[in-house]
Image 1 (cartoon, rainbow, N blue to C red):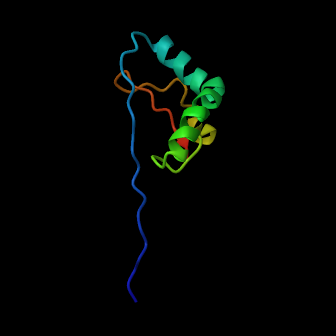
Image 2: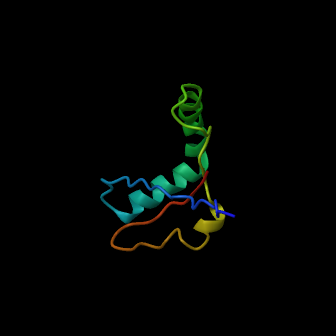
Length: 82
């Protein structure tokens, strides 16, 4: 019997241009609250157009626990729950 288990590939997006750590934190906090609701309109339209298969991309709060202040090489990862 052939093993048909597929490994899900993870994709990433890096948003650059922030000048300070405070700006990064402010954006991450905005996206994890009001930003998710604002962005849902865009995601819904792209789903209707057949470009993507999700209507929203919430922040994965479980993965983000204790990581809001973790910077490596001036980078903070913001995990989404898709």
